[in-house]
Length: 141
Image (cartoon, rainbow, N blue to C red; front, side):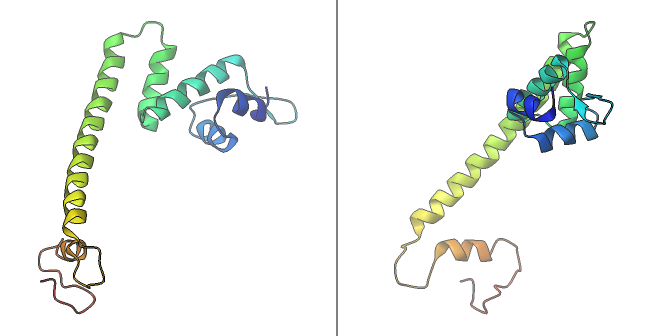
């Protein structure tokens, strides 16, 4: 298969496939004229990588997971450890996003959104760094 075919079948853009090749995640054969010649196994690896990336795994995690996928003597505990670490990072990110949402929701509710210049959102943003003076010359109070 050429890169266009494998891109269409895997759902991964050719640019990303070239990047994965550059960093050694896939190694397609080369034809006599230098064109990439993807095998069915390359397609499976790309589909694997696409799904792993869609779940938010880092490139390094993908490299490790792909290595484990190809290792028939692997221990599932190794795979589970990588997945658990990623799940923990997702949980941390969700907690951070929930805090951000609560703060922003409170600020939006506090802002009248009318013709007056006072705005609790801008006031909060300008006071984000202790001792930081607003750049507009207006007082943060």
